[in-house]
Image (spheres, helix red, strand yellow):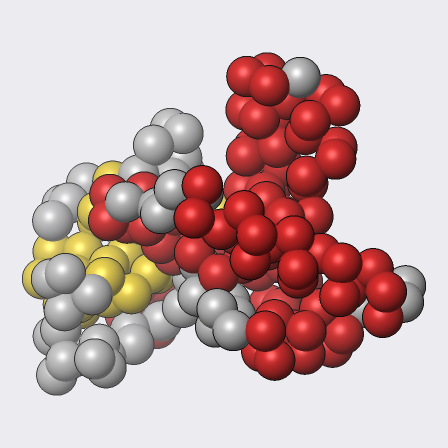
Length: 175
């Protein structure tokens, strides 16, 4: 349940950013008038819902996005009317959003271990689980864990507690 709420917050944050850009570029009136259509566009782009009338209506109803059927039907109609004017997210935009999602949904939650803040995220590109330190506001890979549970150390400036934490939280990569 908490993971779902975090995912929803993350997705909402991205929609908020989109609406902010639209307001800046086209004005508040335009952004408010079409915010429901942009919300649907974003949900389709992020593969939260398939782009067909039935799936979209079901998604909106299940998630209680609108109070009534009339609002739902109107938004879906407007979405398909304007869909050809809306861009598609690029691969690099999807990668950035997916990378951010990794940090919001780690395999092992980030926690303070000595002077480092450590967590473990799944990294599809390298087919490893990465032990990450986010202490300084950016991320540093401390170690990589492969599909056999072998730890490949990337940082040797670790305390015994930090090494123990990594070894205790060792999760094999599963692709």
